[in-house]
Image (cartoon, rainbow, N blue to C red; front, side, top):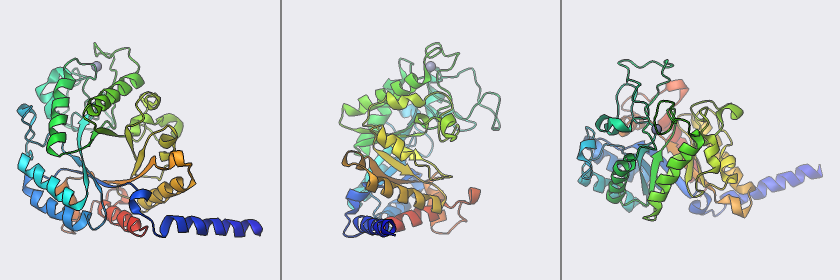
Length: 366
Ligand SMILES: [Zn+2]
């Protein structure tokens, strides 16, 4: 009886700490949305969306997947179709600055150098950077396939690849006036290939960690921070999380080899895995990333608050907040959000509803 009263009191006090007079910034430093950059014809609408939907919801971080959709001056040969102009980018910057939103531009480095059937501009223009040049892109993609092809990777040990990608990264960071960069680095399946003359025989964890460290060090030269997805740092076998949201290709020991100031974006879409604790205990700041299941996003938020509440002062601020991920284009997402098209009900999920409910729950914490 006494225990249950004590427990009730603890719950009450905890709730009090979490709710009454909370400064949302100190409770959840990151309240973010991750989405592809809009195509040029939808920049107007996107700017409006920032002002009317993100700012009132207290979104303070926008991870913007630009990849090669920008009119690069340093490497014009890498411009993708539908590239944003400098003026487009500056309009997004102005809208975010006005709303107090930090922009974190993203270019996928290392992995995701193709979609299912086409190389991205980097490997298209610089085929010598391909980690697996012997594997041809299929006309029609099927999964699984004998090549284990999901996306291409660049070779992290190619002596010229970083001159090109860092020029692109630096240009994007300057135009978006950003102090943090997102390098993606998720779902890297091709790494340390037996037929790569540079990587064969190397340890995959060391190759992965080497690339993370190189990017982090480059950004640190200009006082900028690196964000990456966390999946390659989790043991897919031991956790049962498998090959997508965790690693089955021996990269996970990189968790002990990379600098601790890299911010980990821990994405889980089907369950509210407690892996933020793993990263925080390793010394990293970690942001939990939901996608399309509203109830799972809410459970992940609850867990983030619980971890913070139960932690030592040393650990607490490593639980840095929440980042809602959106994997359709910005235009498609806005169409879903405003009900102009039916929402993406894949596997019973609804990204627009997930975004709405997550931010509504965070607003209640204020
Ligand atoms: Zn290689």
